[in-house]
Image (cartoon, rainbow, N blue to C red; front, side, top):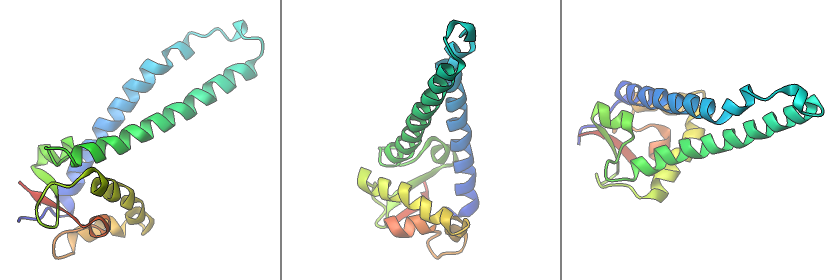
Length: 148
C-alpha cells in the first residue's frame, strides 16, 4: 500500500472544505431569502424578527453540522471510500487490511478528528511523521488513507 502523507490529505481536505462552504453559502442564501424581504414594520415588534432569525440560524447550524458529518461518514464508507476531495486527488480510506470501512468506523474516524484538533492540530500533523502516515484520528479508528 502507498500511504498518503500530510500534504496530499491537506489538499483533499481543502477541496472538501471549499465544496462544503459553497454548498453552505448557496443553502443559506436559498433558505434565508425570505428574511431579506420581510418588512420589519409588518411584525408587531422587532424582537419577533430577532427570535425568528435566531431560531432559523440555530436550526440551519444544526442541519449543516449534520450534513458535514454525513458527507464525510457516508462517502468514506461508500464504494468510493473517499470524499470528493480525496477522490479528485486519488486517495481512499481503508481499514488496516486495505478493506473498505463500514459506517461505524467512518463515524469513529470523523468524531476522533475532534481529538486531533484538540492537540493544537498535532493530531493532524502526525500524518506526515508516522510510519503508515496515520493521523491521530486514523490511529484511534484503525484506518489508513492510501493512494489508489
